[in-house]
Length: 468
Ligand code: HEM
Image (cartoon, rainbow, N blue to C red):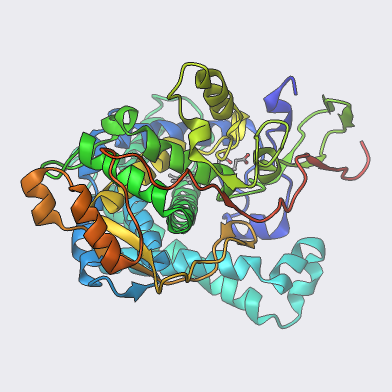
């Protein structure tokens, strides 16, 4: 593909138009000059709210809070953690967008966005994209979607109003402040005529809230699933965390270079289960060519990220969970590992690359670093492992499962700074899961675990639309 921008459009859709204040959406908006300004504004505001220094943002939310207060509270009993993960991700993105909010408000907003996406996915709603005229017939799912949109808009408007009223009083700190300041500057003529309206800011906020919640939560949940299937990899990461971070400080994003096993496990999870396996539909904005395919203007193109991540000519043993493909322990592995990094595209690429990639990477790293240092993740009962076949819709969710988060013996380990091998063996006797220390040879060969076969082929699907 020569020009990414040729494929940067989005196909028109009745529902997308309806849910985006008449087509003012960032994720679903077509590639127009106004859209480009909207994306640039959202990107700049996003980066500014992260204050250009990713490290500082970790003070905006507390991965240690959820691990200490919520997970410890479960007392090692079997629980379904998917909702906790989702609420955590939602808390992070709302903090970046609005600044800190009350937990009850975050939960309400979270439930509203999740309901909205669910209602949008209903078959009777999707049908309206093909035959919008059907909207005149009674359709409870469509009615539900409209009521979710109403609640969403009320929430976003009330937050925008609050920030508008307090603008300037506490400095420009979060994303919504940055964007509102831009609109204000534009009104005074400083930025010239951008064509951007408060509705564009409104919809950019909605996209960040929706885009930043379930995608990241899905990644975290799959990481837990794979680590349950591969306890020896989980122990290796824990050992690495103890050796590099220990218990006397919190992990930081700067630690990632020194925590290669954790970084590799996240990369491998994103490879096997890219949260959005078919990204979002693209549309060609001019006549163009993709390899041997000629595509007319207006062709819908679906990037098959899942297929690309399972291509056997790029990924040896593509169905197996093998984080070591991203490790460069030996010199000769360097080339293979950087090739793996290059071919990993869970956030897509080009003009429509995920806007929240940097946040998602940092958030998942910090969250899992806390979780895997402080807890041992065990199946709800010995041998009861979660299903590896996901539910494929817009995202690839895992089926509900219960897990036990058993607090590591913090006080003992803190005194010694490390677990002793005999301590590990004793714990293994209690938990039924064996562990090993980096001080002794790994008694388990790196057990690779097979996931199910690929569901899609590694091709782009081209679907011509109308006449050229
Ligand atoms: C593991 C986490 C995530 C994954 C795997 C992911 C993946 C993706 C993918 C595949 C796309 C579609 C790109 C395309 O059209 O080709 C996308 C778009 C987008 N994502 Fe993410 N995402 C994640 C997290 C986030 C977060 C945390 C945010 C918000 C802070 C976010 C905001 C967006 C937005 C706004 C778009 C639309 C971009 C556009 O159309 O120009 N995402 N994401």
